[in-house]
Length: 85
Image 1 (cartoon, rainbow, N blue to C red):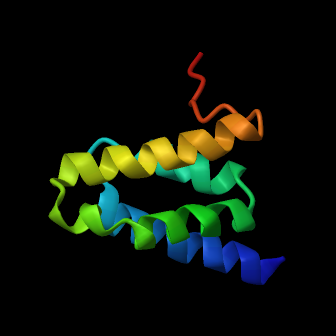
Image 2: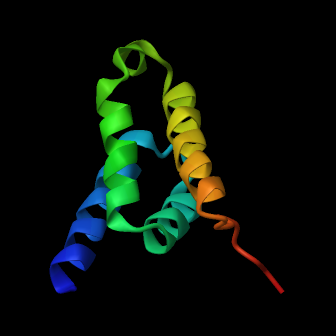
């Protein structure tokens, strides 16, 4: 259990360092927390295989990653939104 948690922290730090355009921190925190590690690994695989991302703008890269997370979350019927009261 602890190993998976540490891996999620590493992944979150990676996402924040490489795909956070200043507006994605909360989204990535929620997504990494709610999704299972195999789903997150699948997203990282998709990111790694997309050769066009290296030429994309920071905003485009962030949007691609958010869409990848959203697609997996939708399949799992998970809402990646912070509910404020």
